Amino acid sequence: MREGTGRAALWRPELGSVTVSILTALYLLTLTNESFWSKGWQYLEGRPTTFASIAIGIACLYIALCVAVSVKYAMKPLFILLILASAAGAWFMDRFGVVIDIEMIRNAAETSSAEAGHLITPGFVLHMLVYGLLPCLLLLWVKVRHRPFFGKLRGNLLVIVPALVIALVAGLSHARVYAAAVRAHHDWFETLNPFVPLVTAVQFAAGQSVDVNVVAAPLGEDAHVGDAPLAVRKPRLMIVVAGETARAANFSLGGYGRDTNPELAQKDIRYFADTTSCGTATAVSLPCMFSVYPRAEYTHRKGLSTQNLLDVLSHAGIGVEWWDNNTGSKEVARRVRERSLIEGGNPRDCSGGECRDQVMLDNLDAWIGSVKKDTVLVLHQIGSHGPAYYLRYPEEFRRFTPDCRSAEFSDCTKEEIVNAYDNTIAYTDHILAGVIERLEKQEDRLDVSMLYMSDHGESLGELGLYLHGAPYMIAPSQQTQVPFVLWLGKGGKAAYSASCLDAETKQRQSHDNLFHTVLGMMRVETKVRDPALDLVSACRLGATS
Image 1: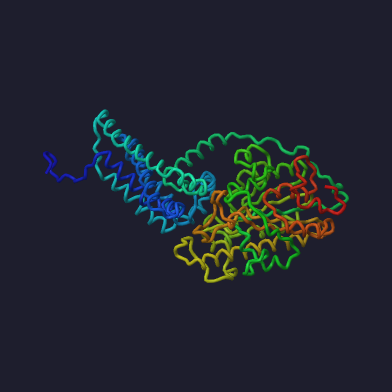
Image 2: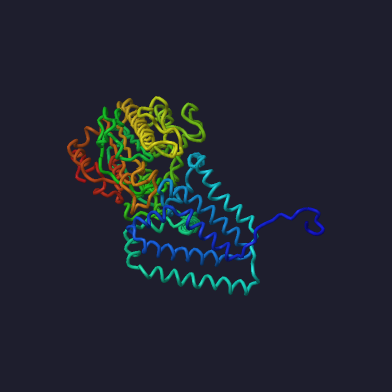
């Protein structure tokens, strides 16, 4: 009994700040870095001495860093942040094989609450309870003993300095091997949890604060339609479908073993089988697709600070609209009319803040009937966005079964995951065929066409990876090879050489072509159109460029 309290004192273990720092460092390094250690063992080719040396070195660095920040009052909040961040990072890196770089963080920051909700599965919650909340509660329970300032400084330095020396010796002992492994495998140290993801998050936040006030510089103000006036020709209507998470590997139009494109196969379309994306996540690819910059030159800042394809079309007097069934246009449609199809969507296809792509077709007939001038409409799909693939298609499109009916991949076999994904591709095939059919109905008064490109692909277990967002330098082809479909109405068929267009389908294409090809199809003349990247103008009968 404590004197004067009349009740038993609650027992709490008491440990020194250095001891708690070392235990926290070892916890972070051993229990939340499975991806880092497994990659390290693989990339160092299973050399025990080399692996042990870098393990000791990194452990010493973690210990030195944790001891260095073991400041009274700030220590526990900092360690709780590290533990929670590390637990969350470990779930996504270990489960899906993702790398948390700036573009992945940007993609997460710009996603919708509905999409984010699909990632908060029971498995994730259990993981965070075991690897995040439980150790945080233990940390809060422990009473940390701090020395007076100078005694603490001396004691901390007695740990930090030797730890840094050991880390340096360990690093130098096999420096040539480590350097070669890091050069060959850029993804290795990007999975060092939680410090690399946290540093990346700080870099992203710093960049965001600068991006807020960016004003887009004018582009293509000389643009004009180099064609006969509307009084003597039909208005031209082009629908550009920006796909979501469709990978070329699963399109039967490109040779996939399953018939995932039965409806498009019946249409007179052209399929560009070798097309690469600008990025591996929507936040990068979508603005890059509509940018004047090729992938090699594109940056997020350039995309924000320069007007894009939609602006150039507007300068030419062409009507432009963006219909969105996803998480927004990522600033692409900032200066044109943008409409969310999720708001007011048919309950048959909408729930939980998301809609299937049928909502695009529901609104299309009446809108096409109102078009009286040259117009470009962009339809931004939800397409094949995961991990909840099963929500992207209705019951009648469960063609490949058994299909995964969960956003928790651990509940499904790989075959079930692929079946669900292939059903999303078959449904996209249906949506695109539906767009074409609605355009065909208006050919008597409009010159119509459709272009479809997906923003990026998807991993379905290849190399242990799922979903998308891998750094482009190391991304597998499943995330960068995307489907590209072009359909021309009667006017287009009469205006272009079929053999010339067919030859283009056999060449390597990319997102770089979208900007210039759309300008070419809409007959827009401007200095910013690059004829070398315009796939159609050179095929126009009687054309000189």
